[in-house]
Image (cartoon, rainbow over all chains, first blue to last red; front, side, top):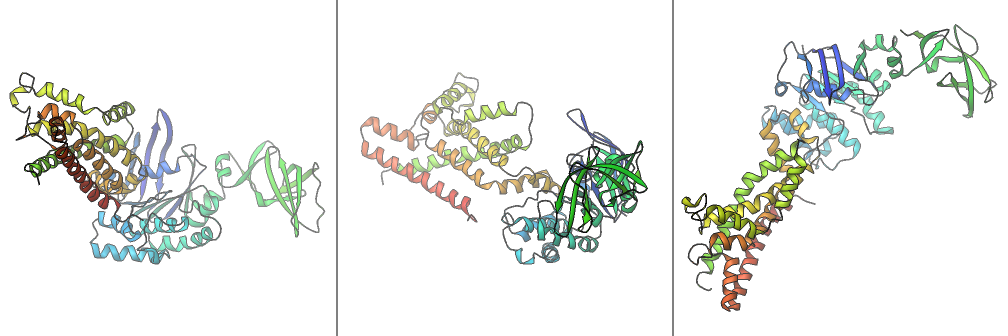
Length: 311
Length: 214
């Protein structure tokens, strides 16, 4: 069982604390999403686990021992994948050969992984000349074909858009379950995290703000930072701070009420999109076309039935 | 063919070839280490290396002469006016060229490539070898530039070799000798041979360099 345990891990660069993690447990054979804004230290955390960087203090235990960085059996799919100037198949084989896999077996595993990612026909193509989507898929194939007990995926869908993004996002869950490993996935997208992961870790400013099973974290944000990362609006209601899912704000009076200021009203054809502010926080509320929309400048009473009180 | 021409050509190739090979053995690892990661004084060091790339051969020759001359610090070794002395001078000329081009070649690689190789499990030597293969175009340019610089220089060879007909005369110093003697025809022939020699070496290296290129 390849659990990853971080204890009192500190990393400082130029005297500035980049990461500070008193304790974090990444559970064996589960998919954990590291979620946080840009620059929060997510990629640095992956690099520490991979042994590409050493913590200033603390220790990282993998499967019960603290192996030398060279001995860590991890597969790392970097955010900006690089390839050697050779065929895609040869690029995948290199990692397998370095891991001690025999030539014939390496070839078979490389080809199988490329097939699994739907790019089998690119095997003999030069790897440094692929489109963005192909590079992403090849990057995942390279990491997964190693079948290492720990798989680190840094923004595996970054730079993809539209159909290519949706397709790969759809395929990822079954791919990850096909190649069982302690998988750590870095993303700044809440939707990706909720869709792909079983456990969530929220990192803001180098500190872990929340960690645990996805459902628990997503429905109980506790801190304002976590709430913001998880896509909640953080609002004030009667002297308390609450996290409110945007879609849960409706017009009219209710359990938890807010005073909104209407800024613009957009005709979407089949309804209205009302944009406004509650205090400093921007909100959008969809209204059906048969409802009478407020006018810009109006003060508007809205409410929510879902609100999580923050500490 | 004029008698002695073949001997002089082979001698030229041997001296400049060995000097370039030694410069590769010493210069490529140094260039790799400079390119690996920033350290205090790296820019200053590279400034020196780049200055060395344009060092006047006569000056290098003079310094080596001062060191190897009979009453100099290494005089007892008896190296002055031998092919070894010429190799040493040419090695000193070639090394900065190799180091400078090697550093630039490795620095031009994607910086994350070495992280990738390390995460795949490559040790430091394997990583260096794989990166060198990626940088082979620049590295072969380094070899060509270094060989071209030493095979064509005359000042250092003249000073530390002494242009002795039987042991240290190379194509460039022979051209000087024949021209001063007034045998322009032979000087021209030697010039053509020197040019052909450089051409063949560069062509071979260029073919290796450009393999698998679009």
